[in-house]
Amino acid sequence: MSPLPALVLALLPAAPPDAVSVDRLAIDALAAWDVPGAAVVIVTPDAIVHLKGYGTRELGGKPVTADTVFPLASCTKAFTTALVARLADQGKLHWDDPVRRHLPDFHLSDPAADALVTLADLGSHRTGVGPHDLLWYRAPWSQKEMVRRVTKLPLSRPFRTAMQYQSVMYIALGQAATKAGGKPWADLVRESLLDPLGMKGVTLTTTEAAKQPDRASGHRPGLDGKLAVVPWYEQKEPNPAGSVNASARDLGPWLRFQLTGGRLGDTQIVSEAALRETQTPHIVIPMTDEARAIAPETQQMSYGLAWTIQDYRGHLQVLHAGMIDGFRAHLVLLPKDGYAFAVLANREGTRMNLALGNALTDLLLGLPPRDWNKYLLGVLADEEAEARVQARRMEQARQRDPRPAAAPPEKLAGRYVEPAYGTAEIRNGKDGLVWEWGTWKVPMEHYVADTFRLKAPGNPYLDGRMLQFAIEAGEVKAFRFVGQEFRRK
Image (tube, rainbow, N blue to C red; front, top):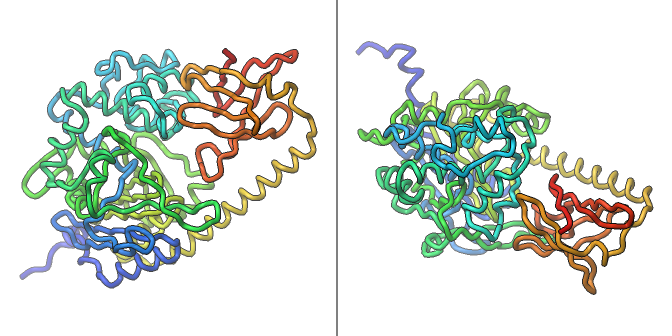
């Protein structure tokens, strides 16, 4: 038999990974990052080659298995873009469609951006609207109202000039898919993707996930620094930006589908051209100092449609992460090398998933190993040290500025309104000022002059946020918060 040509050999995937080596990497990562448990699935285009759980579903509890359910958080977004790809195959929409072709009431505050915004702009986070996560995170209003509010925000960057991660725009994208497909997003995802892929265990709400007996618990450090269980982030309605829940076993066919260009076995579920569009760069992600620190083997990074595309030690990587209360998810495709894998973990605020993902990539591709746990723990330590330095500088600056607030607490109390965020109320009670907005009630402390600081220990979205009041001739006119001006009502 004649030997295979070198080109053919280069296209063949390497041998299945050594299970013992994968086990060692996973166990070492859990220990290094103090993560209770994780599940790992590795696939080639034709098979699942590794599927296993590590550690425990909950501190001191039962072990993680291949069927333990985790929330995928933002890794849900790729299901939405794959659905749009499927609808594009059917001629029901196209990525270049103006958003208002499907959502007539959708608008952006900038007239030029409003006239030009397309579905691809929503999917690649390039509308110019900043993250504004508080418009969805624990918000008391409907998804329709989230989209209505976000369209009232001013652009923080010029249209199509920067990638700014924006989850509410993915809710809008899911609503456009619903309009084009004639059914709710959840029904379309299940009929078009989950059922053909045999992903029977996937759920699209926390209500459904709560019925699963093998379900992980999320964890985060408490105020005492010790790891503690946190409740699942509640999503009673299917959410195109982040409500898919799945096990490592469920993700096996999903990853194979992504590797093969929309095919599973002999069934072409989405055309290769349509699916590859989601894995194609649509906007550059600048390699900032922070990006270079956490991705030292990467020279160029961009964003497609629910996927980050980058080089890694000379190989193509297509990946996405997900994070929600108590959990991290990490999906990686190595399209030119014939591998894909997922790491699901039950602790937030950790880079364990990235460290293990890089280590698995090195193992699968036969690259020289690197101690990614040690390296990324060092990056984290540097970031924490820098944060402490900045906090000290801010405190020193505050101590050098003894100016009191120009108005007493009772004058600051009242109702304030911002077009997108709606009404916020400042209350003055026996324990001092309290900021109330949406589902939040957070104490305030005087910081300096007419600036106050929110006190919400353990809440990364609110703790330490500043409210700066505008006071003219003793009258309180407004306050600024998250870059927006709330005018006194």
